Length: 409
Image 1: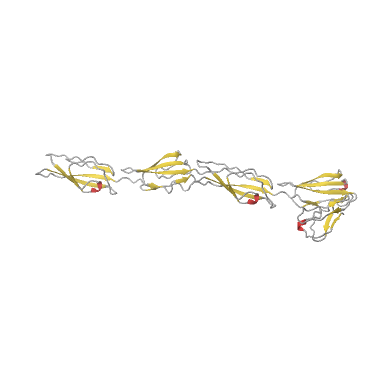
Image 2: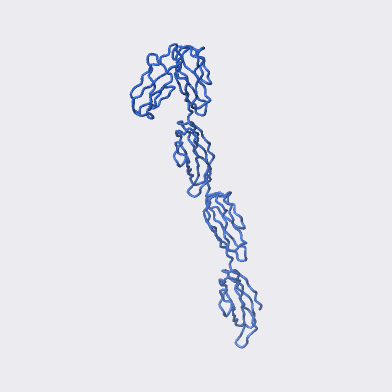
């Protein structure tokens, strides 16, 4: 009788081929393609067997001949075909990624046309994956461990699975700049951001150690005393990078700025002692930071000092005889003050004493006697002296004995 053809996938089994006919014959068969897993010939029914393939579609022509002891019947031919199993192989360049990695994870697929699916085994649950290409959008996916499966779309469906780990890339919040004056404290710089499962470490560097901070460190920066002896504003640029054991985030930078202290230096042009009847009123020269204000305190005598707070100039004819502490206070970023003692006298006395000093002693001022006061100071060569105050710069002077003269005009 006619026999139905069969088609199965590699690794499957054909249905039993049951030969029947008139006259109770014997059935001998031959197979022209043994790649399907069936022998080249046999007798009787063909029972189910596990099929094979050499790599492509295998077609076997099975010819069956009925016979008796005396007669041979007409052969009958049918086909047993085996489709090869689909190839589900695929691989990613890596199996551990960070959410900010570029480019996105893109697989190599042995045979395209199938579909990708996934199961989150740890963390997740969202993995943004293109079902057709397997490309993973790392930035918008959740950190976690995922089993990713590719299933073929051919006649003999197969699938394969790989495990993918996606780690969160930590971030850091912006850190505020700080500006302080020399020899004052910075507030602590505390770092925070968005973390994943893995602990985040904040590594920082400082490009200017002269501000009083080391070149690098880890995690928050404690408060510290800022330094600046340069005379100009000094900035340390701090770069902070968040990282885990697997992923490095985008750095942020901020500035720690140290302003120098203002310089309140000033002198009275004609010295520190004036006659009440003098024709030249005292005037100042600001040798440091300009723009500040002058004030005074009466030491003795007085109490009236007709005084310009902006310039420090004094109207002798309207002022009382006395001793006055004149203070200049700057008005810039880091205010400072300095004070000189100015005397208005009816009978000026220039008397003072000095002494014997070592070069590394504190710089001395004149020691006034007999109600003496300062005028314009000069000295013999080799001694460095401030003409307005009489202060001697010991370490800049040469060793020796010098004559100092205080001249009051």
